[in-house]
Length: 253
Image 1 (cartoon, one colour):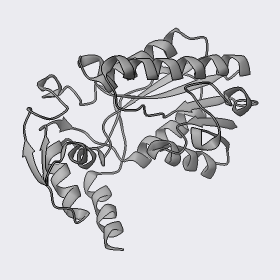
Image 2 (image 1 turned 135 degrees about the horizontal axis):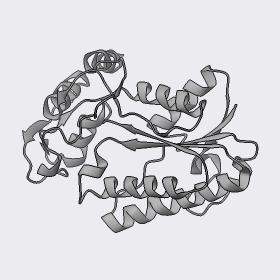
Image 3 (image 1 turned 90 degrees about the vertical axis):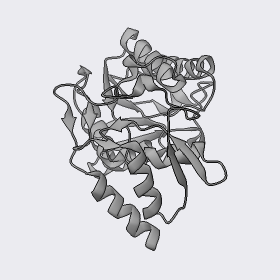
Image 4 (image 1 turned 45 degrees about the horizontal axis):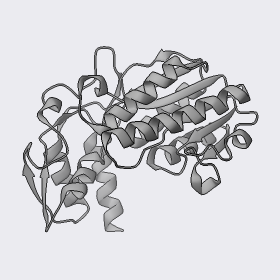
């Protein structure tokens, strides 16, 4: 198949491209680095010639709730319109588990707008909701750290390896549209503070973590089971410990 990946140079996009190419598919990358701009639509029609399926693994810029919704809405509208013109038969959207249970989070609001547009569009679709990635807690600590101290919310997660997410996206893209796919998650629940601490240690980084709902970017609306997968979830194989060991080895090289 000829498959396009939007956000092809990002974390998940790069892994999805690799998974598709390993399986023998022809992959078209959609990103500004590759001459395609989702914000303006420049280069989209050219990129989608002969494409049968599109995987949207884009990640928007940080902004206010209104700015984030506008960015995701605009880029998704441009992408879906170009797909319809090109006769694309399957739009696969990477989304997030729990976004419909949380209000006030800008990124989640943007993802909800993406889902709304995909569901209302004319291109057959599959939405793949995934839990947070294994590298997410350390990333959050990096966002909030000041003078070696990082406030971090004690979220309960069931994290997944980025490569496992990419494998699911590649599998879904080569199949028939399924509307909403099962929640995709890793095999174990984890505490985000502990994950951040262990990841930073494995990477040789020293940051004092302060578990708190104050001063961070996540509120108590995300506490408890809010971000965990629902019934019938698709459970990916890679544990956090396995992923962490690879991080540790990479840091030692």
